[in-house]
Amino acid sequence: MPLFFLRRLVSFALTLLLASALVFAVLELLPGNAAQVILGETATAESLAAMEEKLGLNQPALQRYWAWLGGWVQGQTALSIAYDTPTGQLIRDRLQVTLPLAVMAMGLTVALALTLGIFAASKQNKAGDLGVMTLSQLGLALPNFWLAILLILLFAVHLEWVSAGGFPGWSEEDGGGLWPGIQALLLPAMALAAVQTAILTRVTRSAVLDTLREDFVRTARAKGLSRSQVLWGHVLRNAMIPVITVMGLQFGNLITSAIVIENVFVLPGIGRLIFQAIANRDLVVVRDVVMLLAALVILINFVVDVLYAWVDPRLKAGHAA
Image (cartoon, rainbow, N blue to C red; front, top):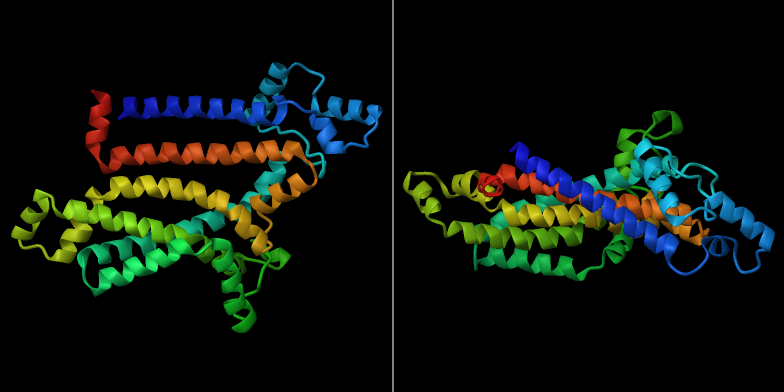
């Protein structure tokens, strides 16, 4: 296990380094002047020179790259052009909304998808299976931003159970708190989870049906175990490899999809931050947010690889050999 983990850790570090180089190259080395983009076409030569000095554009590209990378490692990020605040502080504040939103959406997705997928597999070609597959097809067809608007109309406008948007914060001193914060994120989490639940339900159903045909399932039934005991106690774990793969991809997708949903619900998360940064031509913030999103996706893939070895020790043994 230590060798397997070490290999995955080295792969994670190299992938992260490559991603940082690509992000830097795309936003700083492609043709064009970042200072000109920020200040606009009417900027004077003096203001352009001052902005280039502030952004470090008068330094060699490799030196700027290592300075940017070293700042991230040390927790010292550049100042935002629009906010005159370190980008790390801006991102940290916005992650307090985006990460809980993604975790809530992922929790809803996993709970619903595993239950519905196993139920559909246990009722293969029956009314229950047909109903679940129909619902999942509907979930795949609905854009999450359109579903978000419907949820606002139903629960906020007509029923008035929750607010239509905004976020009160997690601190009770600011008028928020744990429960008000959860309430504010509940509808956005439902909107994000709908499509992902439909996808994961179908994957779970297919994986469970494939596993049900294995010999060990017949052996477990011959020992007197009930169908539900076999499904939840034996089949599910052996069917988890493709499910975990999709779950890892989905969590990364939920974080990026939150960019749109946060703007629908006016949530002060990463999505709102990157939209505002683009509108303000704040390329410093755009660069750091894109790097953060890339790092989160790479980290999630690393965690998924480690989970593979936990779920199926054969994978770990194969790498060790």
